[in-house]
Length: 275
Image (cartoon, rainbow, N blue to C red):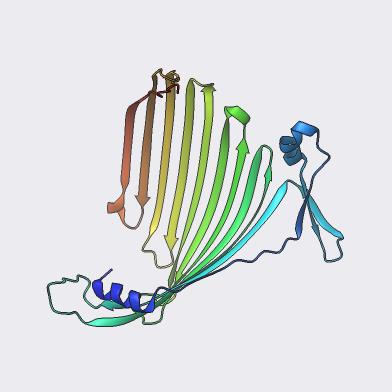
C-alpha cells in the first residue's frame, strides 16, 4: 500500500457490508433419550424433517441437518500510484482513482451423525474493476465433503471441489478440479500414530495456456517412546515425508518431481508445583 493510498483510505474509509439470512425450516426430531446417554444416542438417532408452512412433513432423512447462507460485499475506492514502485524521497507520483468491488455469496447444506458428517457447498465470487485497470472475473466453486469417525482408532475424510473462473474482459475461462483424502489412525493406542494425506489438482483453460496435473502425497508416523507425566519428561520420534509431482503438457518447463523426508524428535517435560 502506497502512502497516497493510505491517506485516501483515511479520508474515505474502507466500506464493508456483510449480510446473512437464514430461515429455520429444518427441524431436528430426536428419539427418546436414555438419561446419561442422551448426547451420543440422540445424535445417532437424530432425524431431520422438512415441513411446509402448515407443518406438514414434505421429506425426512436421518442426521442433524444444517443450512448456512452467507453474503458479503467489499469495496475499495482509493487513490493509487500509477508507478508500481513508490519512492517516498521522489516527487509525488501521478495518482489515479481505483474503484473496485468484490462480492461473494455462499450456501452450505449438510448433516451430522454420530460417526460422520457430510456437506455440500456452492460459492460465487465476483471481482469488478470499474476503472478497467484489472480484468473483471467471476469464480464459481462447488464443494462436497464427507467424514467418517472411527472412534479412538482414527478418521477418514474426503473432499472434492470444482472451480470455474471466467475472465470476462480477456474472454477465456479456467476450470480446476481438486480432490483430497485424509486418513488418520492409532496403530497402537498412545504409542504409535499414523496419518496419510493425498491430493490431486487438475487445471485447464479455454485457450490452451494451462493443462496441468499436480499430485501431492504426504505421510507421518509418530512414535511416543515415553509418555510425558507431571515432572517427568516425554519423548516422541516422528518420521514424515512429502512427494510432489507437477506436470503441465503446455508449460513443460514447470514440471516438478520432488521427494522430502524428515526425522523429528520432540521432548516434553511438564512441570507441576504443589502450592
